[in-house]
Image (cartoon, rainbow, N blue to C red; front, side):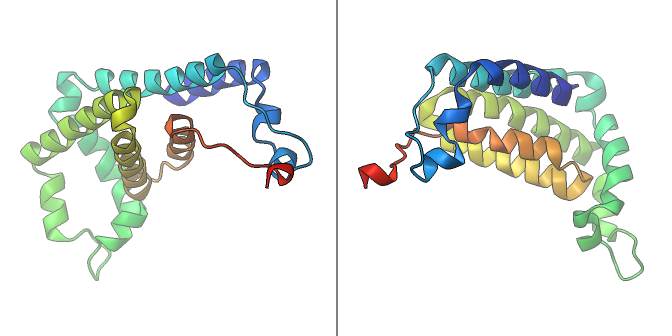
Length: 179
């Protein structure tokens, strides 16, 4: 339910934020003077994205996920129908033996599951501290692109990656009048 949670809270924050004037198309091309909104709206949105990652990471810290059972069920179902599955398929369309061996290895699936939980928790920590944000953005992009490539989950990953602009250092937009 991460997607629904995130969309509801983002939808609740946007109406009270000055998002329409901050980076509007008209503002970027000098038709109006873009202005920054109050910092609390950005901080609230950043917090909502961090909650989603924290919940996802902490929710994975259970026996069923960490032993690889959940990942085995999901990946074996979605991987053959994905972009990565097409790349990993042999001439007859079946997954290469090495890939099939990993998907049938309890140890490998447990390691991948533990890695997924660790990455989501690391994203929260990295995005929360400005010094490590570039690493958090890189980890998040790697996570979401790999999920898109292996499991065909695109929209949620795109939404989460779009949030990274909130965590990047602010840049001052110059209007035509300022150039």
